Image 1 (cartoon, one colour):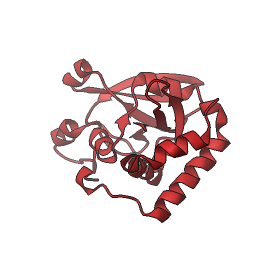
Image 2 (cartoon, helix red, strand yellow; image 1 turned 60 degrees about the vertical axis):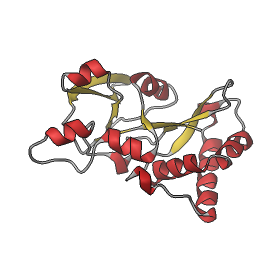
Image 3 (tube, one colour; image 1 turned 180 degrees about the vertical axis):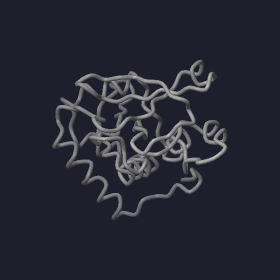
Length: 189
């Protein structure tokens, strides 16, 4: 997914996406208490490039939904809210450096570059824990999270999941990848 290949969605794609997001928004009101879909829709309609990012989040299995509103800026924050880490973004190592360091059995891509190409950011550990307050996510999968530079400099990366009704943060070599590990993203609109 090359960022330069970003596309404008057709009117039909926009309508389908907005309908999907509205349905999810209305079905999951505890995630965004006090917010109104009309306000979200107005903000989305004015942000074409963000709609493309949300479309790709949806297309890769993220099931994006509104999780926060910034009263100062008027921005809404979307997180991937799929029950498990998005299926279209699994089996990836952490970043480009990790991918290039692998001598053999390289994964097809890496989380940081994929997120950048989509126009989103990896969740931070704090954001991941906030997401887990809204439901139970990653009971069978795990998600790379933004890793502090000091850890990354030493070759490591962080990932999180939920097991035994507890949210765990772990470390692994940044070049590792597993079929059940992907990443969740955040997008501010």
